[in-house]
Length: 411
Image (cartoon, rainbow, N blue to C red; front, side):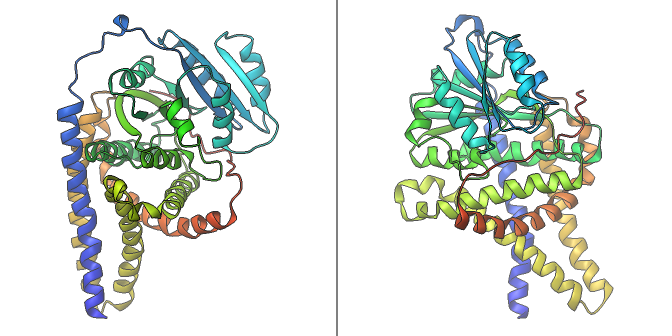
């Protein structure tokens, strides 16, 4: 038993340390080779028509602002398709009023909530363009974000299926929202950069992403039975050898939860969605042609195992430590090493993202970040796993509920 605990303790300590080094190296390489491109001469390109898809469910507080900013972006040829997915608030009446105000806007009003993926299905069938830009109903798209996304399709080849953008956080007044600013830079941004260097991306961002319609049709569009349609469609595209790229200059300003319960529900959904994809696509390990995506798939399983291992080892030492000093040494040493590495990763990541968003001032909030992120994430993964298994057995439409949008104030 002692040998088993010793091995497990080594794994709990070394895995996040090694992955942090990987994210630092990968994001640095991405910056060196992909983020130093010259400015794009927007006025010298003949831009194709795009369809901006906006699925909505109970968004009466945010949808008018989102549509207003979408109509005002500088992209010259666009149509906006908003799908009200059976909202129970005033989203429908708000959209009917807005459609009279903005000529680019089309509205599809569904009477029953069938989920975000189903709403995107409907909008895709109604779209006229080959390139689709999907934006959440609480998000504000940057004026040139669509240009940066579509530019890839025009210059990176016919096998490019999707380009994921760079979500930025609007509400920054609370501890929880500021911690998420740190997380989006240090974890999400670093991981996407690194995965792009490796050639495969775990998931596009559901908040802001552009698709080639032909690629979506090739994989059967979004899975309507998966709780996170963005993760699911990413894997379907890459299994059919469509490429996915990351464009950090394509900014989209979004709202994040500002309560523990709100962030808990959001992250349970994310973790469940990732695990559903892992359970559905295990067959890639038997297909040699899919070998380039094996590291991303295996890392997800190892991360899941780490969460269970961390909880087990922590409780083991808590209940078996013969002295307070013994327990204190284990917790202090492992925590110090991980916090130290996290702070290095955070500083590098914040410096990279500060090119697009002035967030280096939030570095002082980093002291809270490693403790809250690692502890909360471990329990989230564990709680989400049975939900993912149950969902795969149940099937049916993956419907959505109203999320915690936090404070709408934007700096």
